[in-house]
Image 1 (tube, helix red, strand yellow):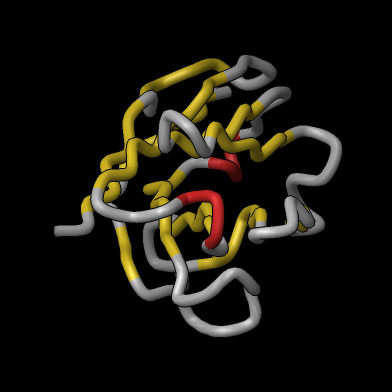
Image 2 (image 1 turned 180 degrees about the horizontal axis):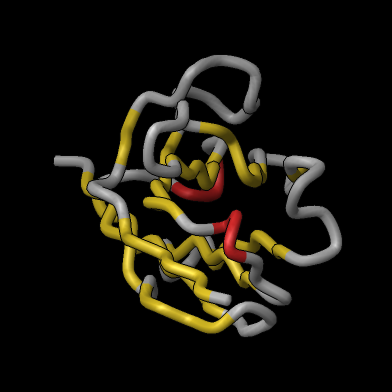
Length: 120
């Protein structure tokens, strides 16, 4: 059974940092596209960052230079380091996996999400 469980969310003042962790079970992080998405209240879900099976990384323009995605394939963790947080980064953050090593199709698996609130 595939499970993706996010943790590390919370409330932080603008300019602060948070590190999100996605713990993956029943799934091979090393050979699948792993992504972080977010959804702000009243807005559509949007991609934040992705890392594919070849370790090619991509970021949304809004987080470039501030967020860093990484993975520990052996321990099956995917991380999102978020620095210089802004109030507009507030939302629920989701970890997703698959469906293949390339990040060019919709995800196969979703976590339940973790809430990030950035206050000014």
